[in-house]
Length: 267
Length: 264
Image (cartoon, rainbow over the protein chains, first blue to last red):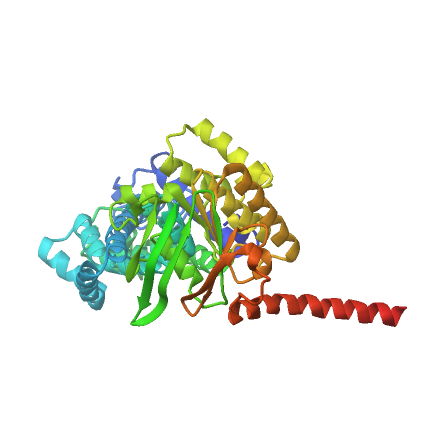
């Protein structure tokens, strides 16, 4: 991976941005200059300045502090969502491909139904039933994404199953789960890793989008989608309110996309 | 003792192997020779229980082929090991050579980590590979090194019978000779039974006591290696196989003579 990054400045910049983002997210409490929830109506709608580099919002809250705290609400949940999706994909995909036949047919029919449904529509329906809130949105996103990973992992395992080293591993005494863990998963891990990194940007956009529509995170959360929704109402008087959260969503999604694409092409 | 009795294999109604019979005594050796597509590799896979026969049976020390249950498969593989064709990537590309060689020791023995390491070094030395290669992935090995590594992996659990499926087919002539010599020395040292599968009759003398010739999935004939050049007794197909290797040698000799005359 380092070789791929070394020869490409754009990828290096994207990787650096991601590293900084994660660092800032983890140390948000120390790094942010103000309390992200502290309101001060005397300082409302201030443009960017030295004391408030990103300006303030309609309640006088410091936007830089909110953007930094927003990393924890906008980016970190994506990793949790994708980890759960990948674990489901790994379990069901493996079950389907390795011990297959009738179970494979049944599981593939179920995944067909889920992949046929538009993901945003499914999410809205699920949130409609369960109510607003980030937990429900995470659940809905997992529900609309798991099928893709099941199909991906099933396909990869089907391919790797035919490799001569899998047959040879049997002669060396590896069977069932042992073959899966020692021989199959390490050989499909690079492909899954690349797809996961590429999907980080898509899930960030989905979660922020749902918050922007008002069905995800709810105020006063510093989630970037919610901040963008707030900024929309003040676009003419305080454009910085929407600009900075929007810029962060854009840069984060682009960075993960660039790194993912680079990894994909690098193979 | 390996006994193969009336072994048949059909795939989609097409016969791949028909009525194959032979016996390899303890410490004995048999070469199976035939052109590509004669069913040699299928036979090896049937003996290794990687495919199930349509009919017939394979017995090793009176025990029949495993059909289900990991335990019975493990017992079978602890006695019989195979080295696959070297064109096949039979070592896991995601593992280091050390982990590849360690795998049969983990699965078939109760050796501790240090004992496993000693065993790996011992067999690496035996097949003439340098210990520096252990940290490399199989993709970094040359063709000859790869095949030696596969041989070490197969021998490391001390099987009673070793099947070699076209193990020198894609090696150059020097490496072929080295591999054959290595096999001969290991066989002598360990009293190992050997089933050597090849399309090249010229590799067999000195390595195997008996030869079984196959064509289109059928046994053509079986004879002692010392009787290979007895043309009156040999089947016409065996003679064709033999002549095809000899004709190349003759062409080279003629070429060399012509070359000497022209320079002289």
